[in-house]
Each structure stands twice: as C-alpha cells, then as structure tokens.
Amino acid sequence: MVKNPKDYYYWRAKKEGYRSRAAYKLQQLNERYDIIKRADTVVDLGASPGGWLQVAAKLSGSVVVGVDLVDIQPIPGVVSFRGDIRQQRTIEKIKLLTKDGVDVVLCDASPNLSGNWNYDHARSIDLCDSALKCAKQTLKPGGNFVVKAFQGDMFLRFLNKVKRTFGTVKAYSPQASRKESAEVYIVGKNIIQKSNLPP
Ligand SMILES: C[S@@+](CC[C@H](N)C(=O)[O-])C[C@H]1O[C@@H](n2cnc3c(N)ncnc32)[C@H](O)[C@@H]1O
Image 1 (tube, protein in one colour):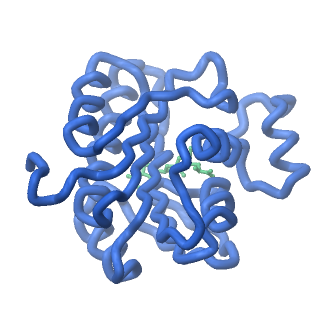
Image 2 (cartoon, protein in one colour; image 1 turned 45 degrees about the horizontal axis):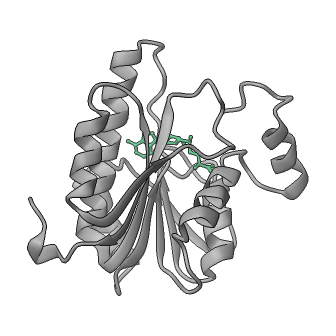
Image 3 (cartoon, protein in one colour; image 1 turned 30 degrees about the vertical axis):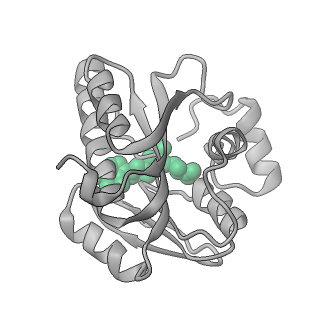
C-alpha cells in the first residue's frame, strides 16, 4: 500500500500506531465535515488494513463494522468480516450486524490498479455505486456517507446520484491524499428520507 516509504503520513502513522497513512484522510475529512459523532454506528467498506476503522472506533466508541475482500486483523471494538461489497449478501450481513441501523457509511475501497486510467476509473465508480447502494439500504434518516472515487468521465454522473440522495454533498481532497493521486472523496450528509429517494 505504501508507495513512498519516506512519505510524511507514512512515518506519522507508524509513530502513532495507525495501520495506514489513510487514517489521516478520514481524520481530515471528519475535522472538516463532522461526519462521525460519539455513539454513531459506523460501517467501513473496503476497510483493510484498518486505519479508517481505528479512527472510526475512536470517534464513535460504539458499533463499528468493517468489511474487505481480504482479512482485517482484529481491532478492539470493531467487528470485521471478509466480503465483496458488490454483493447483496454482504449488505445483508451488515444489516444483521447493525440491527438498529447505521449512522455513517464509509468507503475507501480501491480496485487493484491496472495502470489503464479509464479501466481503473470505471472499476472505482462500480465500487462507488455499490457503496451508495449499501448506504441507501442501511443508513438511518439523517445518516452520512463518504466514498472515494477516482476522477474520470463517469465522476460527475456519480456525484449527481449522490446529490439526489443526500441533503448536502461536497467533493474534497484531504491534504493526506498524495498530490499525484486521482482520488477525490465525496461526502454526503443527511440522507434524504427513503420514501423520497430515486431507485
Ligand atoms: C486503500 S485500501 C483501504 C484502506 C483503509 N481505508 C485503511 O485506512 O486502512 C482499499 C481496500 O479496498 C478493498 N476492496 C477493493 N475492492 C473491494 C470489494 N469489491 N469488496 C470489498 N473490499 C474491496 C481492497 O481489498 C483494499 O483493502
């Protein structure tokens, strides 16, 4: 995961006990947009190795669920399992683990990069669509959503879908994202009541 071992956030994560430099992206997103509050139930899609889960567990102190294609080593206060976020059965398992509903759905999932920009972009948007579907099915009224998207020609269409689903929507690149990265985080706050949502 770490391409440049001399990176500032890489060393900071090592020193502060975070599993990934990505932990600082979620911290910065949360400082700016106030996404996770104390006692929130949080779901993190594409969560391995677990930096976001560590941050989410600290902020919420309540139910935190992580899912990834690969194993996530145990984190105190976090329930994690292996699953593919593109599959409905993964969403059903999340529902079982969060019986009272979810306050925040996070998704930092990335496809394995092929180096072909258009192909990687399309696969990233596919993961974004899966995350949005999960958010629509699990979030309580007023719930929040964060998803990573790689920029490209399908980005705006996806952003508009999120805009139709949440009261407030912003696109943001945290300082901890690498300057050369194509990633942007979309933050949706305050999900619109399910009965008023487009399919
Ligand atoms: C950038 S890493 C996430 C880092 C994490 N936020 C952290 O702070 O440690 C992206 C993850 O997305 C996962 N992923 C990619 N496609 C997935 C899918 N279809 N279902 C579940 N996880 C997926 C990858 O296995 C990888 O672990």
